[in-house]
Image 1 (cartoon, rainbow, N blue to C red):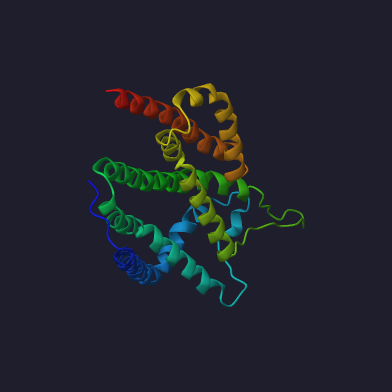
Image 2: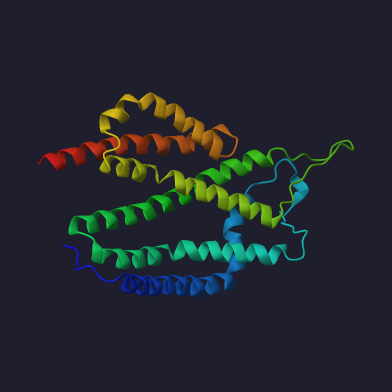
Length: 253
């Protein structure tokens, strides 16, 4: 049962404490991540560096460049900050949990804890799929446009700027993680009685087309990457329908 209502000043003081904890944890993690920023950059660049250079056999080791004197430093700051936020996400959710729990019923606590855990797991799953499956395929496709110099012809080589590369990588990782939140959105809509499982079942064909459109917009422009993103979206749609049916059965018991 929710506790007795407390004055607004008490809630504001509690909220300030939770925000301070979140900021402090992110700051400590950021300093640690910045110390290992070169290793973090290597991890993000590895899918590109692992690609062979069969189009240009004499290319040798692939290099990154920066054209602004502060570009490398700012890039390391971005990597460290975003990594620290991701690593501290469970801590942030825990602080939110502590702030909200006193005003929730027991069943609301269980739902909130379940959605927080599921959100982090699905986001991490989307990031892993993008890193281990999408990047190797996408980078191989883009590197196929490199050309070696034959008979004094034009030679085309990729020399990626570190800032542009990191922005592209982070954007793709975030979008995949966001797409993998799809089941949570559906379950929340059902819990709010905005939609029903029958509504989803009748629009399965539309959702299939929409999934392909989303995959084409968010994934790199090659068919394999789009299919890799479409398959989880379709599976999540069916899993959401199955979960909604279970919730209906649970309500009727």
